[in-house]
Image (cartoon, rainbow, N blue to C red; front, side):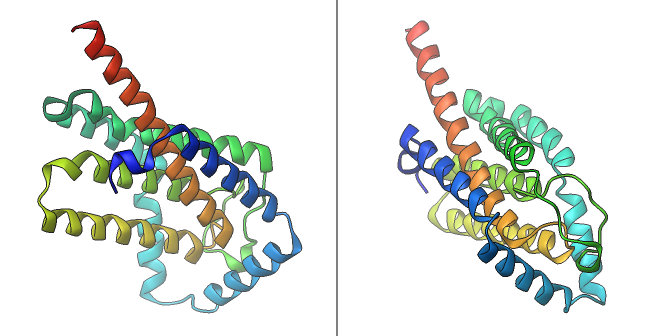
Length: 212
């Protein structure tokens, strides 16, 4: 996942168009049936220890916890990566900004009490948990990619993908989101990462020219 291949203005436009299209799709009957069927399927599996695991994971990766973690990580990594260490909080912040803009615009209802293990009343689309985890996880990959050996890269990729997948599953499992909310969160996370990469690269180039 090289930086040059994912970070360009046209990619930002493309992913935003995809997010808007998905937002429109969530308002259709087809999406309602798809989301409802999937939620019913997951709800039928509720019970036992797995519920507790999913509830715990869903709580641990709250955006309110990820935000300070990215700031601390940026401070720790500054000595090695300088400006690019800010990719972690910048990606997270951009993805959350996109997420809450869409939540405000769409104001989609969350799954009802019969499908949910949690009691939430704010807008559902897209998932902020998934957006924050996706943007931060992918930012970690982008940051560490140049300094890791091939085996370590593959291990990191697998770990981040597994984490994003687990968080996505947890949000549907506890009934906090519909399936399409999760997809929207993934897209918002990608948008946040690309925007942060573009801004930080431009800032980095500006600093080099200024001090050349």
